[in-house]
Length: 182
Length: 103
Image 1 (cartoon, each protein chain N blue to C red):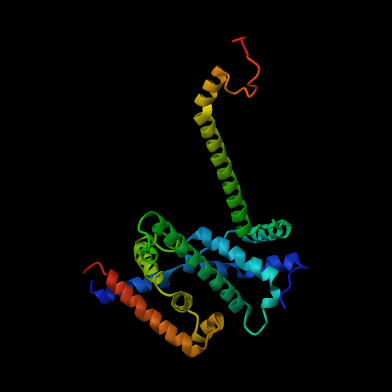
Image 2 (cartoon, chains in turn brown, blue):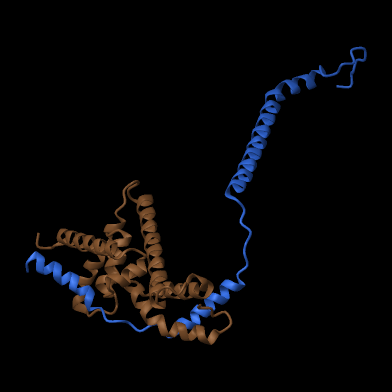
């Protein structure tokens, strides 16, 4: 049981032990440093406030990944809703191109010449359904095994396999539509 | 560059991300957030329906007032000429037996 209400030092040690892992995962999902910091803080706030949510059936890191991914998905949905409302209110009522908006943020941990490629990849990833996006980040960017992904996403291994298969196929399809040579 | 090579390059770019250091004050910020949440006062929320009803009632009241003011002024203006003539000729006086020669 993780209960830090009585022990502030243990909580701080817990944060320091897991912050790197959570922050980098979140950054891969949301791309913006500021948003990633906010979400990482919220993950640990949840850990402190709802310690009973951890049932001990999986590794702590898996549980943290799960909280982080849920928060990222909520955040991305909010962002898309915001963009959609803004666009529909001011430019074209009833028409939304939120998912096709260019990605202005590029993960800061990338060397300059690769930034452009990464921006294109993120633009493609943002067009995937949330569960495929999550599976892609966990499988392709975090290099988790199918079993680990299934624990984080609370799905069966076969569902994860099919989700990743569809995500790969869709990313290739989206990217092939973005190929500049055509 | 062929299309397949370009797509593979793009996909590969995501795998070359180096981990970033976390803000050194993250733990402090989490503690501050928790403190803020624990001391946060819960503001009683008034249902939107009640706010809407109250606003609507006030608007209706205001409109009724404006309409009444306008109609009162109009009828006063309409009768103003007649009142003046009646006053000048003393027709407003119901006392028919007393002659008023003072005018």
